[in-house]
Image (cartoon, rainbow, N blue to C red; front, side, top):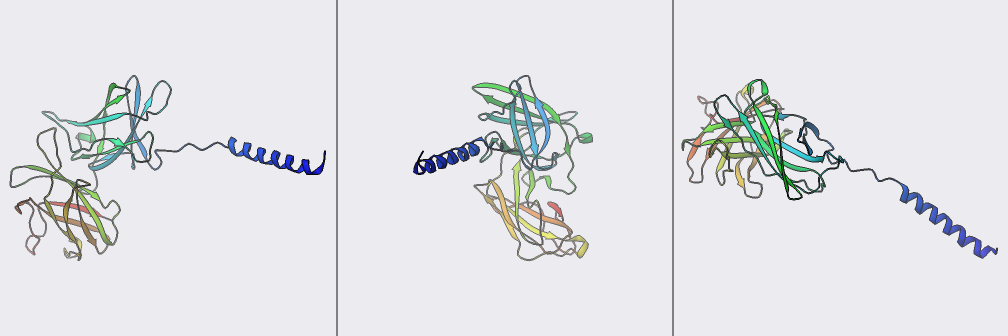
Length: 282
């Protein structure tokens, strides 16, 4: 064979070999629950619903929750489902639910669904709560339910109060999750207890903010901004100035859309804490 024919053949063989090697390299599967810890499995005869949070636990207050549904027959995860959930507290003489979001497909995920639940209390010894998952796959309806444990948060990150309008309100601290010595973005969820099962979002109120440090003469901080309703997020956003690390009381006042103070008071030398407050320590 002449040299001019040998060189192209060698190049073609080399290219084919490299291409074959590249094609044979396995693409590592995407871990859709990376940085999440499983809280528990909720099962029925057909599926296993895996429930995740960042901590691996449910706490009083705001819980960002992820779930995915596994087929028990082939262990494959469902990529197309319509999901709802029903958290329920069973007490001795009554049952009630709590504020919750809809459940939707997590962005850029194939099998993961996301939402939040705000647990306003624990039960006796951390028990009393259950979580029911209702879902539809291929036009077939399913449900699965199990008891869950809700752990008491160290600081008051959720509170339930009765306003001067005789309405029960639930306020939950959502951000900051990692406070810093800086002007932090602060987000609070505000809901009203319409009945024992319904907790709709309260819109267009104002939540005033006066953070104080009890261990340091109850001093405040500059550049705070009261929380206003964010229609896109359906939550309340403001600015929280933290000038040093430690324990802070976030003194609040809840003001309706007619500028009527429903709960909370101004902080003075003789009145050092509002009746409406949340807590942060870092």
